[in-house]
Length: 167
Length: 124
Image: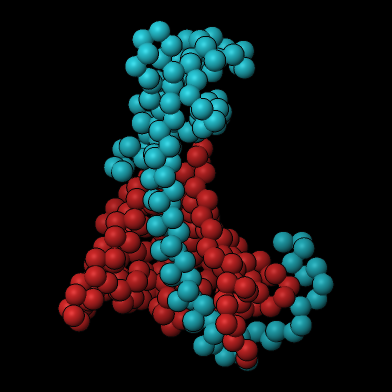
């Protein structure tokens, strides 16, 4: 398998679209792997656990039944302690093509989003994933994006802490 | 920027006429009558749109009592861009971990993969 000195030459960076009129977030990303493989990384729990959870946390999968009508629950752990938990159902698992899930953060039990992931074969061994999140209203959508920012800031401080501890 | 402020900004920009007003103010300051000219609407209607944009902090007006030229607060857009960019970067970090997972996976497990045929994905 060849490696690429410049990954950006083969893998496009994530793009985000927040529609001003609809409570949606669209996340588009290309991967340097065929879609069967990308799809597996999305549904096999031992693979999912390696990348899906928030950075700087460990992901503990409590339930994972990746089939149409199945369910899931996982928790994010920091220093072994649960800091957040999420659950939902697999509305549709269409191998290598489409994955539709509901998603709830247990900290906000009335909130639920519908996550539709589409896997497009780019016919050159690469795959484009298009993730569409649909939430209740624009305020909820904006809060989700704003909370992402808080996590980003938090992680930035953590990195700073580590740097300061070294010097 | 607070969540409330962000919601007001998004709500203000949800209207096509207001987006158009913002686009015109991006070129330069303009009075209400100048802004109303290209539309088949009253000055009052444009004033109403401007009030929504002002409440969201997107537009301000000058001190000239007669003309009160409207001015676009461009830094609000810079803040929104920064805010979306941080969310995007978070997603990108997650997907880079997925890149690493994909690189470490065996090619021979899972369903048999043959060479992709032309237009395989065209129907989907």
